[in-house]
Length: 110
Image (cartoon, rainbow, N blue to C red; front, side, top):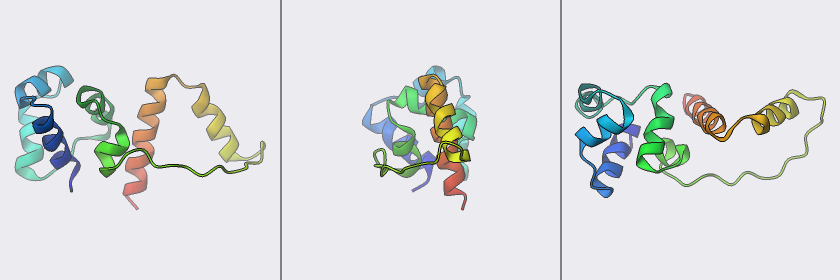
C-alpha cells in the first residue's frame, strides 16, 4: 500500500475531509489530490506534520505497522553507532520523530 493510500485511509477513519487536512497540514489541496490521482507519495519533509495531524506514528504511516520493537544491542562507546544514538537522545522529541521518519524512508528505498 502506498503512503498516500494510507493517508486517505486514515482520513476516512478520522472522518476528516481533504479540505480540513489541507488546512491543518498547510499542504495545498491540489498536492493532496495529486497523491491519489497520480499515485504518488508526499515528500519526506511533509511526513512528520502529516503524522501529527493524523495522530499516527511514522511507522504506521510509512510501513502500515506500529513501531517496530528494537532488540537491545551493546555498542562500543567509540563507534559511529554510539555517537548516532547519543546524538539522537539529545534531540528534542519533534526532531527525534523527524529523524525516525527520514531513517524509515531511507530504509524503504533499499
